[in-house]
Length: 368
Picture 1 (cartoon, helix red, strand yellow):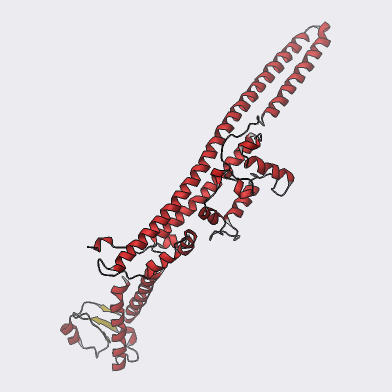
Picture 2: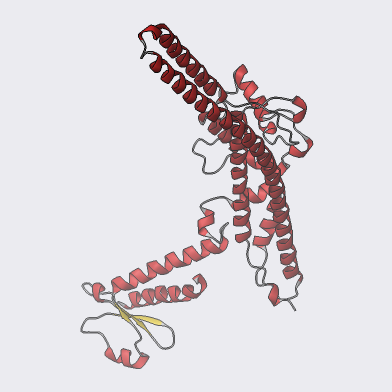
């Protein structure tokens, strides 16, 4: 698009200078100056005053007649179009929407293909079919795609391990929640039945004047038993505890806890989590952002810098060998934190997609 407009832009400028030297731009006539586009593709500027030579219109064949103001606007538009086309051809992105999201150079450096990307962009895109240059371009494309696919598989493997831990924690949490709900439901029913039954008995005894003491004792006993059962229900609301038998602790690396063999993050992914996100308002790393979010949402409560907070970290990063008893709240916090890490890793896939979209075309169909 920019290459097609460039000759027209140069033609306008050269015609403008030529007519300026001939004295066509006289005082009072600039506002009515017109541009003449001839059949041979060239352009001339013609004043619109009485001295305008109408034979030129007939001889050269007028296709357009524009005022000077319109002509200047067209030239400015061509400048903008040409500049935009050049930036699109030489910039880091082929997709301007993705360019505003993440820098391609940072992603290429993260996965170790900066040299290939630089060589690919510097290569001749008009190399002859079957030439070594074109085969080199294809090899560079293959190298970039292979490396990108390898990182994507590492992301998928990490997400699979996270999902496995979430699934196991969900099962244990569901088991404990069901037992808690059954206990609380039974406690509520018993409190209603015993409290209501003894309350009714106490009211019946009051019908007799000789049973006043018995009625009062029955009422007091009914209220005390109902209150005791209610307190049991409140205590049962916390639920039971249980160990989490899963060979995975994907949060341990965040808190410098012992890591199981299956719970290591690949270097590329861990480096991504240790980088500052371009859109982060506080310019902190993604790991620090996750930690701050967990503290603000009370996933880590009390904060990690307290002794009780360290116990909480042990509960969300434990391994089966530790035999720690986890509550429903511990499991819910662990699941939520793992889901946050999983969501953060999805941004790396977005960055890899932007990297692939920024590559110039390989034109493999031109090869013989």
